[in-house]
Length: 225
Image (cartoon, rainbow, N blue to C red; front, side):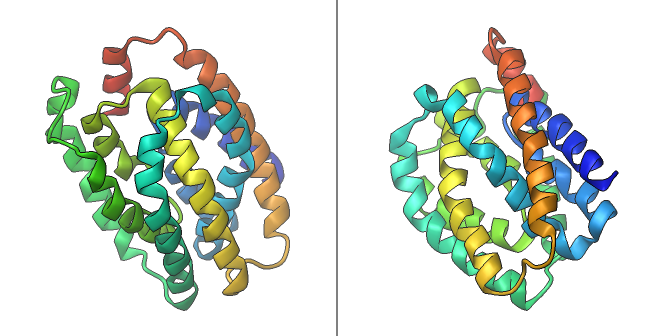
């Protein structure tokens, strides 16, 4: 039953994630925490998301903005490794509160979806952003929606946003999951649970891609907010 519920949660969360610009892993954290315990939620959600990412990468490959990836990824790899190490040393649940407050502020930054940009985002800003977001992701398990306002302000919407975020997350999560394993945060049958979750994530990505096709930018932006 647990495997089934994890797969179902993955389908629902990543269908929503695809049509709303991200947030699938963040949606899964409380569900996985309820089913298996909060202490394994971060590494398990990371495994599930990682299993489903190759398919998502394939689906959105042509929409990836490689200039953003080039600036974001190098520091993101460092941040992911440090974040996974610190996760194994301490529990930082309070960071979820800070992330939650930032996400709520986004709702007002874009005036409930009526404003297309809230600040000017330059390409060079993705360098420190990559480190900061990946570091926090290693500590908490998921920070995808935190990136969304920065992509919107840079001008990436719909397939371009999803594709670029997926490319950045795919490589950073390889380092993050490797760090969880090396530093002792992964054990037992978590890999099997992660596979079940990942299969659901894969289906959710495919369903979401079909729902995203033909959606207007204005509709997408409202769903993101």
